[in-house]
Length: 242
Image (cartoon, rainbow, N blue to C red; front, side):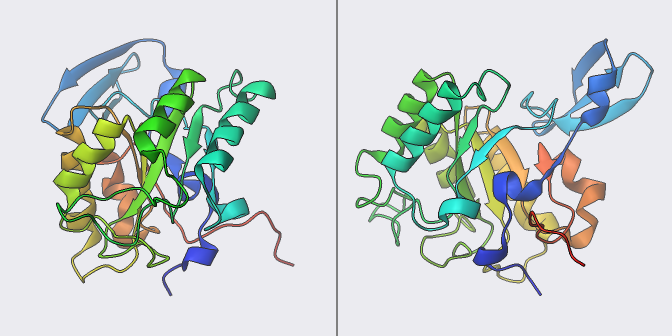
C-alpha cells in the first residue's frame, strides 16, 4: 500500500544520498554528458553519473516540517525554526536546509495556472520567506508531488505543470524540492520523476531534487541519473519493532 500523508518520514523522505562515494575521494574530474546528468571520474578511476546541478555531493542535512507539525505550518514557525538552527549551532554543523512539507500552498492554482502560497498561513509569500532563510545563511526547501494533488489533497500536485512549477520555485529562490508520489495518474515513476528533473535543470536555478517515490520500479538503478537523492523504501519512523 502506498504511504499516506500521515506515514511519510522527515527530511526528503529519509532519502539516500546520491554520492557517498565522493566523500572518500580527493580528486574529481567532471565532464558534462547532457542537460540533466554529469559524469564524474574519481581519483580511483570510478565513474558515476550524477545530476548536473552540482548538489548532493554529500548527504543533505537540515529540518523538515512534517513529523512534528504536519499540516500546522505557517511562516512564523518556519522563521523561528531558521532562527533556532542558527542559535543552537546546528547550522554551523551543516544542518542548512529548512524544508516545508505538505500544506504550504493554496488549495488551487491561481487564474494564471501558478501554484501560490496559502494566503492565511504564508501571507508574505514564499519569496519573502526564502529571503529571510537565506539571510540566516540557510536554504529553503519546498514540497510537491508527481500527481494531480499532494498526499494531503489540500494543495495541487505538479503533474502536468512541471516546467511552470520549477520556474516558479526558482523565481522564489527555492533551494530544495521534495517530490512525492501521491495521486498519480498511472504513468510510471520512470516517466513522471524525470520530467521534473528536466524542468528543474531548465529553471535557471540549482535546486536539490529529492525523489520521494517510495522505492518503486527499482529506483536505486535509475534515481541517480535524475535526482540528488532518492528514497528506496517505504516510510521509516524513529521507533523499534519488537
